[in-house]
Image (cartoon, rainbow, N blue to C red; front, side):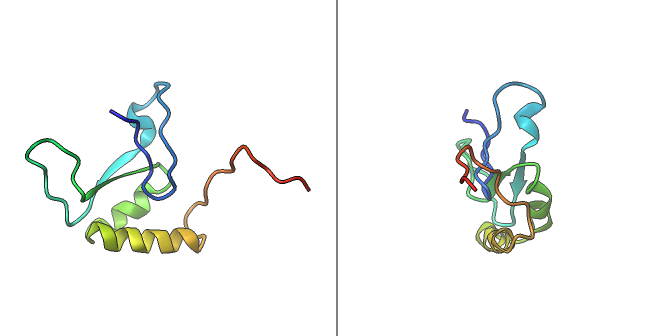
Length: 91
């Protein structure tokens, strides 16, 4: 199984132990229909600890509508921004 990856910011969980899944949460949206074969349903998404609570607040919406709203809030800066990468500009 691959490590969880936040559907919103793309941050991955580390595999170095600690809490199970590194605090990442699997959020079930309104259009979730369990797969009979044990696959990963389209109505489920992984979220990092920073974005799990806003995603849970929108769990009564279908996945596409919730993700559209979350991405708009993320782009507007209302949710935590992405982590700084290793590449930084010089001043």
